[in-house]
Amino acid sequence: MLGVMGKNERDRTSRRMCAGCGSRTERHELVRLVIGPSAPFVAVDLGRRLGGRGVSVHPRRACIRAALLRGALARALRGVAQVEPESIEQMIIGQLTQRARGLLSSALRVRSIAVGTDAVRAALVANQGDLLVVAEDARGRAQEITKMAIAIGCATATWGTKASLGEVFLRQELGVFLVTDRGIASAILECLAQIEALSEDE
Ligand SMILES: [Zn+2]
Image: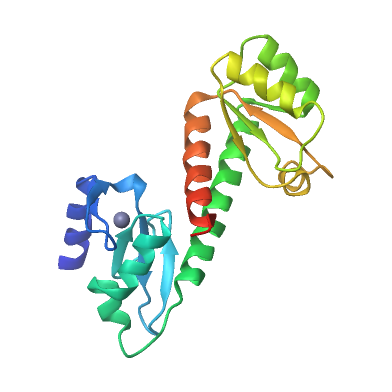
């Protein structure tokens, strides 16, 4: 059971090397890419649950591209498959989006979220709020609410559209919501920062 021991051993150390840029980084800042067991393919293992051989990379375009050119990932794929960096980026963005949505469900369960302009406003007036999320196409009072959030030291981010945020909360449209749990807020913020880094034009 050498493989299992090896896995546990690796899990005890929290720092890993990025297969792209080669720097050692906290494990949670890296994304695990798994090289498929049978067919040579690459899967994104955000939750680190998949077995098999994997490498860790920063969720950044440059690191993903570099990892596909050299190192274990490149060696495993050489001559058998061509994996486009864009497809890996899209897979990571998809999983980060799923994770962020899961975190929102957690926030809903523990009632640490205010949804919609009026509820968000009321929470901010009461000095509550760790993360304000505004849809890219939100208009009207979104600007005023953002100012209120900044004034009480609440983090702010833009994410998706009114339609896509609405989907998460089973509404037709949603322009703003506010997370009032610090831990969940910072986890969501990390997801959104990584999505943004991967979505940026070069
Ligand atoms: Zn890197």
